[in-house]
Image (tube, rainbow, N blue to C red; front, side):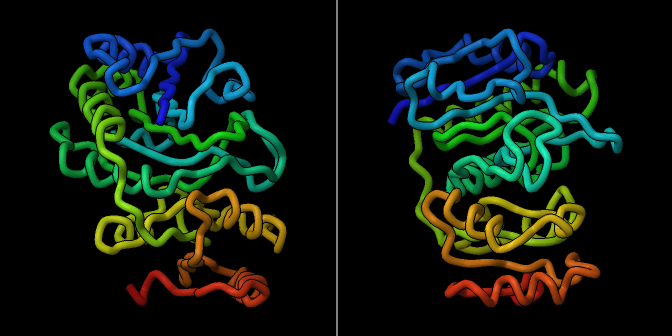
Amino acid sequence: MNFAIITSKQDPAGVNIAEELKKHDLEKYYAKLYEIEERSIDAEHIDKKINADLFIFATRHQSQSKIKSLCVHSPGNWNKAEAGGKDSKLCLCPANYLKEALIFLEKNNSVGFDVVQECTHHGPFLEKPCFFIEIGSTEEEWKNKEAAKIIVKTILHLLEHTPKQNKTALGIGGLHTTPNFRKIILNSDVALGHVCPKYMLEFIDKDMIQEALEKTTPKADLIILDWKGLGQYKQKVSELVKEFDIEVNRTDKF
């Protein structure tokens, strides 16, 4: 399996991580670092230019809360593509790699940042499996050398160890930072792929659920609802998931 690690020269966290990655012989892991000129979220169809089986975007995470964090998530848009990607299109999410990354980050979090698997959001759009691994949320953290070392240590672990094959799931509801799904990822044999948060539920429909199930690799065979986190959309989502011949569970049942 060949890996492409993508960092942006515009991104302080990406530059920081790239500097640390260059200290390691990536070729022995069948991996290569690509430092691109554009923002990572704008690297549309980079999988057409680079021959790799899995794309790892190592970037900054920015949020209004400014919480110090180490994050992973899959790219894609539940509605309009306002930050790269395509409208209502998700990327192929390697759910087992996300789970392995989150567990490893949690175990090796020597900086005391929050460790988070976020919901699916932003671009770019690729047709090959891909995910983001990020340092958040301000310039102080983006340039933190120890945080970059943890990210690189995690990436090298993923390159060297094929993740265990878990039951894969689509998550629906809850917060952007998916705290209720995080507990399931860390404490069960389930790997969460795409997650549609509460603030995107007005746009979810049968087609988007189908897209999310099929764009999880391996294909998701479980839907997990953050029941309280569905808010006013409980009935809508309940009716939608009944249309699929698939197991449905709730976060509070784990």
